[in-house]
Length: 407
Image 1 (tube, one colour):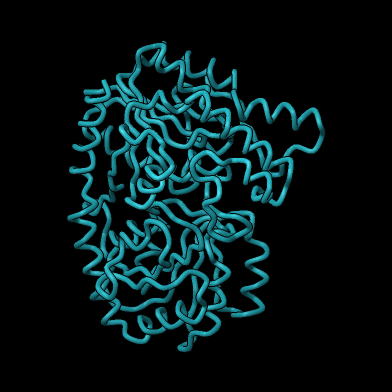
Image 2: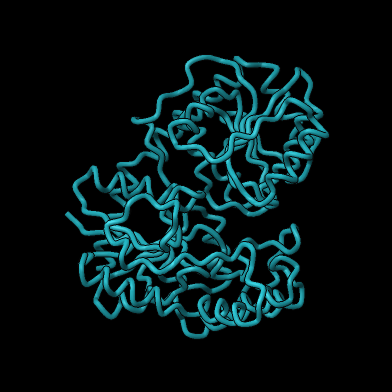
């Protein structure tokens, strides 16, 4: 049995990183390991064993307005004394055999890493985005794919103002990335896990700890996920309502699909109001926004769909939305960016189209909606892939090998 400390800025199911962490912790607990968490104190957190030691919630949306608040936030992003003090207390109390670190930048900062090393706790890091090579973490510049900062050229973030079109915010994240690179802040991690070959390739291209990098798929538990029982249904989008997710493109596509096609949207985010207005203007009465859903209700919604759409316009890593759709026996229509094409076998368990191509997306969706039997058969192939490639047992075995090698 291992004592495993999971470290992530959010400790509730907020996005893909949190979904993976919480599913993994549950899997590890069921296999006899003892699991604890460290992250921000947040009103949406479930009850936490070490709540008294969690650093205070830091909100960056909206960004601080006064000069004093901006300076304090900048200092916190680079190095958080509260996060360091908190994790030291948790390490002394829990005495973990290994720390598994996820997303820590901005709110926690790499200040949580050095105390782990000082206390002799081996650390592995799972990458969920491109933060180690891109100050704004998405390889995007005003909505367009960008690799200008690759290799440590972080000044491009300032020149392009790619963080919220703000000179101040872009300068801050560029300084943050530069300092963390110069101080090798993430060098504490003995292994760095990339769920997609694409992300791993970008890390290697940028020279980020190549000797520590390993590729390991996420997992999905098909034994605890019932598959879709019969053909039929409409289109589902599940994810954060943010520009890079491409939901606006999907709404435009739904407007062009015949058959009275309908779209269910599960998730929250800063773009919700704008997207609701767009949906009412382009596809009135055919788009339903459900907000953030608990996992059981979300999976019910997935099973009711004929197809799940992942219309991302950024280099996704390995989104859980695709794996959960496959586990439910539902095919996926997605774009050709990042790790997404690694997941879908074209025409067998889904369809891959060009990003931002409304016509191609509409055509792919209409083709599946018009032939429910074909969509259902593709869903069965997706389920079989989930059972074989993304099985929990093989994921846990590989991960435990890394934990022990790290130790």
